[in-house]
Image (cartoon, rainbow, N blue to C red; front, side, top):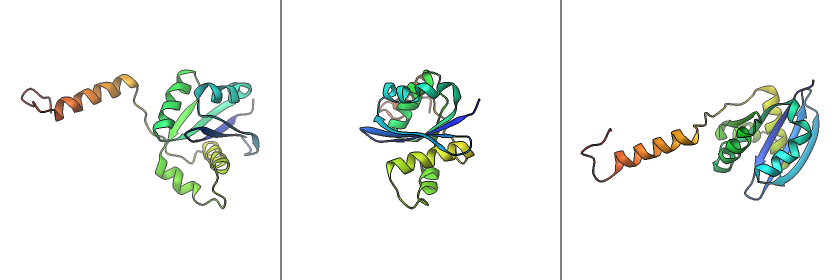
Length: 142
């Protein structure tokens, strides 16, 4: 079965989504609401063929990662600086073209993945940081 690769260019209200096949041919392009359910719905007919879904590291990107990864989708958060440099070489910078570029980078493996901590680890780290930087440091672990 032919593999597909997805690029998500996430905006506050809308997300541009592009799906390319293993040859790099665009299979689908669509703008959807920046909601996990809308993105899942746009990918529905392709879910069994998806190899990688790329999203740029950002607060919305991390949120979408958690929601879509939990649903079993092969989503990867990509380092924002590396992505920006790669996308800046494109002639026409639009959300649609950024989604295409991200999909192509997923297909070619030209990305740096960001490790996303699970929510529980983030809570522990945040609690430790608060504990270490609080006003009473007599019993701190720092």
